[in-house]
Image (cartoon, rainbow, N blue to C red; front, side, top):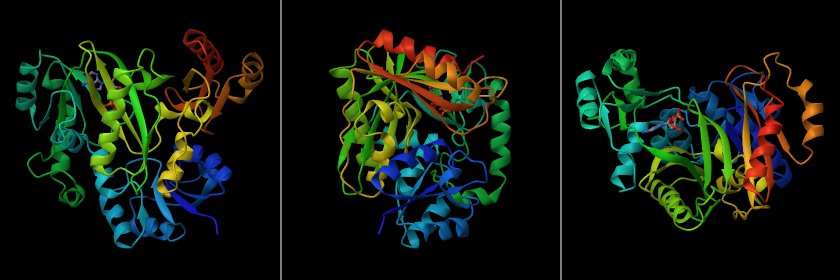
Length: 392
Ligand code: ADP
């Protein structure tokens, strides 16, 4: 009988697991949030992942449950585990990815390198942090942010007044306390961080099986535009040796200490004084690993399926020297992606085009393009030019 993997969430990450599942003969099933999701092609159920009964019923149809995102509430995850469902990554690991204050707290406890940070509950505490960090810092909502939406650079507490007000309202709502993974002393707070003067952003992906085997892909450079990943270069130029070793050892340590199963992506800052600091953790395939579909022996999507099923992991070597992925953000303003195919595919027959079945909308990740080759400048140029066919 085929191994059955259930994915909660119908976004593009679930969608990109589907071809890998088909190749391996894995029966992949998706619990989608509704119709017309990116992964609806493999949806066997539709429903609300906040609802325990819905998720439990879906879990009964599969051998292991995994995720397209980290937002499934802890009480739902715990109910799955109590019902004997295999859940990868598990609730304890996911708790660290679900809340940036919990994440900073755990990473600091482990002695891993992170920016200076504090949990700030009000304007006075934020002002103190500003005073101690040069008057300009980064403030983040602990939960619910993505693609830079919960991140602001501020020089005054007024600039996050709306977030403090929202937190106070949330604090008044007693129901949320059942689901918080935070210790009582941090309460409802925002995360304040030093504004890191980084030379570039890196990302290190690893995959870990429940039985412990762990593998790493090459560290990559990621270029953000307005807080959204725009480009990824694999491997990160000039990273061979010290930078690659540090990035890998950080990600391996995070995966092992937190007991992460499946793919883990660690977003990193490389600083001008040559330190590597952890920015973010994602416990699932990640945008910075999309290049691996076309550029590595084993893609992050195949590897995630292998890992959550506790199957031996695949090799992570690259087909070529360099692999560059460019996100298609927004897409053409006339909304017609397909109209751009003939010219794009004709001009770049060696580019690999991936689209997610999502309607174009400003800033939305609707697809990506990967080009591989030997010379980084040439590959970057061709990947950008191929992706540009889908802009206006
Ligand atoms: P999200 O969870 O929304 O992706 P991140 O915490 O990854 O948010 O931050 C988004 C981007 O904001 C990062 O990729 C980086 O460019 C910038 N950023 C985040 N934290 C800092 C920091 N402490 N110092 C400087 N830049 C930061």
